[in-house]
Length: 390
Image (tube, rainbow, N blue to C red; front, side):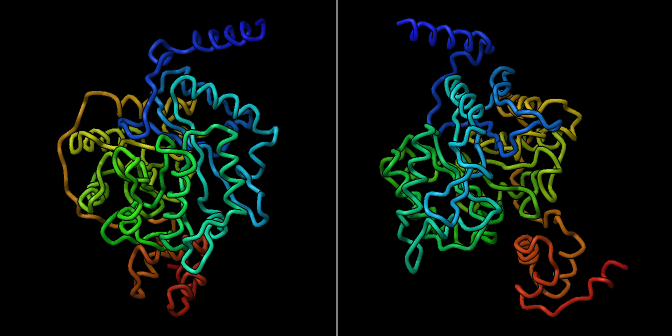
C-alpha cells in the first residue's frame, strides 16, 4: 500500500510540473492531425551533457509524437542496437524513464528503424523476392518493441529492397501489435512524387496500394509517411513538392513534411523557422487535413535560428501547426531541382547526361565519392582535379 501511495505521489508531482494544457492531453489516436513530430537520435546536448526529453512536455511545445532513432538489426540474430548500444543497456535507462513520462502526458513515443546504416531490412526479409519474414531476426525486434512499450515503428529504408519486404513487415507488425500500433515510413520526398525516384529501390505507390487492412480506420497499414524534404530530395521552403505528392494520389493527412531543424543535421535543404512557418501556413490553407511537420533531429534544433534550447524550435513549429492562421492557397506543383549536398559534383554528373535525382542518389550512396558514383551510373570517369580548379 505504501508503495502504491508513493508511486501516486510521484505521478502527481510530475503532472503538477506540466503546463495545465498538457497535464491531461487527450489520448491521441493513430490517425488524427495535426501532428508536431520530432526525431531524437543524438541523446546529448550541444555542450555534451545528458539530453532530457522532459522539456518537450514541460514547456508546452505541443509535440505529439517522437521517434527514438535509430534501431539497427545487426548481422548476428538477436543483436539489436539503438544507435551503438542494446536498447536494454543501462545507458538508456534515463531515456526510457523519460519516454514513459512523455507517454503519460499524451505523447506517442515510437522508434525508427534503419536510416543510412545498411543491413536491417535485408536481414529481416528472406526469400527470393524478400516476402518472407526471417524469424531469427524479427522475433527479437518484436520482443524489444513490446518490452519497451513503444507506440509504433517508423521504417526508414535507404537501401535497395523489393517492395514485398516492407509489405511483409507491415503486415506482420499489424498482426502482432494491432491497429492502434502506429506504422509509418520515411521515404525521401521524391519517392512519393510521380517520378518515384529515391533510395529504397521500390515503388511506394505499389506498396501503398497493397499495404491495406480492414482493421485500420483508413484502410492503410502505413498511418503516414514522413517525407524527407532535404539533402537534394525535396525543398521545404515552398509547397510545390508537397503538392506534387498530393497530386500523385496520397491523402494530405498521410504526408508529413520532413525538414531539417539545423543545417548540421543534413547535407543541404535547411531553412530558418520563418521560412518553414510560411510554408506551413500555405499548406494548411491548401489542405484542411495537412499531415503537418516532423523535424530531424532534436538535440540541436533551432541552433542556427539563435535559439538556446531545442524545445524552443519544437514549440515554434507547434504554434504554427496548431494555430488557426493560414496563408494563401498555392497548389502549384512544378517541381524544381532541390539544392544538392554536393552541388558541383551533381552538376558535373548531370552534364554527362544523368538525371538530377540519379546523380543525387549515386552521390548519396557513395557518400559523395565522384568516382564510385560515376561507376554506379555507368558514366566515364572525370578528372576531379580539373573540376575543383573551376
